[in-house]
Length: 477
Image (cartoon, rainbow, N blue to C red; front, side):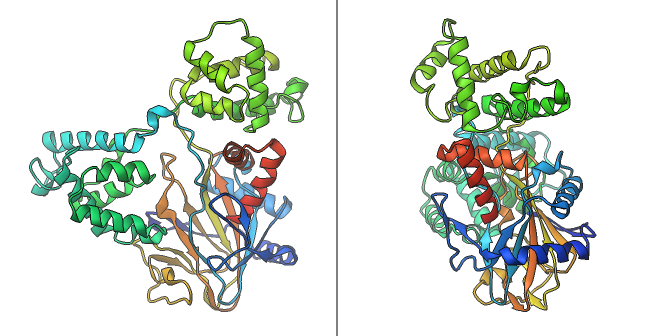
């Protein structure tokens, strides 16, 4: 493995798969290739437009694809091959492309009310912590501009500082918004800075997810003071965080017990744990039955009275009522067998939404010219002076050439389970020849379960509908 970029994190991988496996993927997938679809803003599949003109198909499990998933999990240190989606084959003929996009899904968040303003609150924590560090123990040879009284010294709710902070961000990352198709934000921010408008930082952080770490990165690059992003508060885990973790624990425990696990919690049983709405409905029904004559907290009683029979009511309630998660564990354990399933709720966990975590893209053949994978926000360069018809982003950032039997490994999330918009990338068109590649999309949990979670919670789908939508959507990204 060779590191190609640190932001986004991109590696070149060699020796991961064989020429025979590459040939098998191309041969077996050729007859099923179709025009690559896209997802619109409402989550509906549409025929590909000019932003994506390639062809694609995906494979059900076979000896070849299972081996790739096992090796992929081992390479990336993920717990199980089930964290990988079905292998996807893509073909780019002369001039075909896939313009800049992100591999992760931007569905609803599962954090509670206390964290809805989390990014702006995190900004305050960062200002206070970095300011205290610069007052009491500044780095040696620190530029006077970052010390108290300097223009780059963090001061929460100080208009002059905030506008300077944002101006540094615009100067250090001038193409940030354009590269992700948000040029309107760039215009708004530039106008706001010029007009010395108030509340710009608060509006930006509350309206644009994940941008704070990139603004801080620009400040760190300017001041040469690194590592201050570690002073940001961690995402606050809540009942949903624990619910996701508990389901994964229960599934693992059932697998560990094997035939000793009761029939009703076996994978074909009515109480087998999953991320689906049907499982939520069952748990809520058990809670209403078991606690019909039990006094609960006033807030939880009010919530159950108003929402108990709605779709997604358990997850939505657990966001702000931890007690609801605890009841869900109790009612399931009662039916699964307390002697076999004793779950200890951890005192502290890291919140993580179900989503894609990284991508391993396999280059199956050599391309005579073109066909690069481009990361337009990276400052690294392997190839320069690239011009590709219909895709000007190929001339920006890191362009990884499609070398046969190599792979590009890149992360869609940062180390703290935060989505990384710097992972924006695209597939440049071949200028000569045809490009074949294969995607291994890997999640931060079981890929199928995670896909069902985000699809069912977003659209209110049943188990079967969510599973079907997930399979289709995973092939579309």
